Image 1 (cartoon, helix red, strand yellow):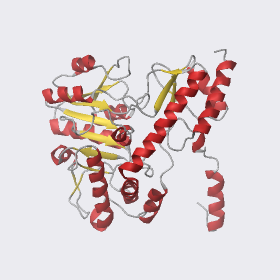
Image 2: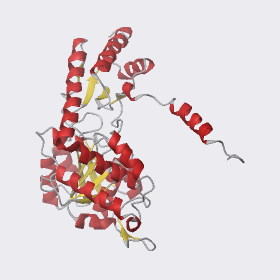
Image 3: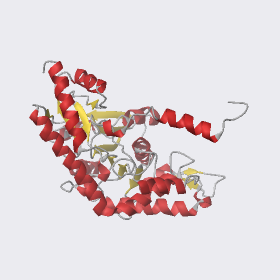
Image 4: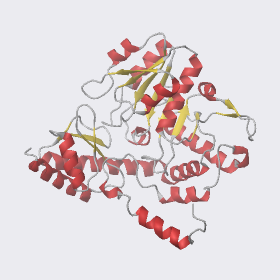
Length: 377
């Protein structure tokens, strides 16, 4: 630290220069986050110093959090759902698994997840001392139900289904998973970190609290919800399911706390409430339709150069099948396009977010064609 601090102008000039090193969103096809809505930014700044970890000091933003949870619960088919605004999908998944483990009290417990599950479940195994059993996928990149049934035993405390997988955007058979969970008397957690703000505005899937047997859901407002980072969400069907998370808090304005972190940014809850209130169902429907239009455009343009998806996309996530995907990705990165890859099968993973345009998709496909030709494909 300096003995004498710099002036505000000097600090801000340095910050502006360093911020300029960050990459621009208009070249990002690899991220499930996007630019936040301007009203979310304004709400964030208005509640910047509020702490939801001590809600008695900040009753206003605590009320906004509960309103946001209520709106998300209604969107997911359960207006009476309980929960909180978390830091994101990883925290929400950890907490859901922790609630299931604590409710059951089984030594040497396990959870059963799809092979497509987010890497947060590997952290869960380590942090919570749970065995994480991974079920293989079917030809459509959904979890194989026969494999799930074989992996579940009397030490299984939870089954996990994904609604919008990170790599393929696929939706697991939640109704079948729920029936199995009900028959075994165990939790079913749905990780809809990405799909939670897409599927309600697409229709055609039965995956949320409307399915009897779904115990908890992860959903991230800072993805397709257009809130600020970090703004995740963890919702439970009932308060009973959340009681296993309670910790006594001896010196705060509340006696118990269910969140993983102690100090929590009230600004994230305010931003989520603001953008959901402003967008409404109509606004989110238009946003999702825009992204699905981009998805269709990408599929049409890539087909013109002989590139097709591994599976037909069900949301705005596309896995493009190419030979030697790592080499193709490297070529695209050299041209300034930021894409990622799926694990198995290897494919280019493309996310069509609100910051993308058809014009940039056309430029991307042109460069993809150039890279493929240079590799003799």
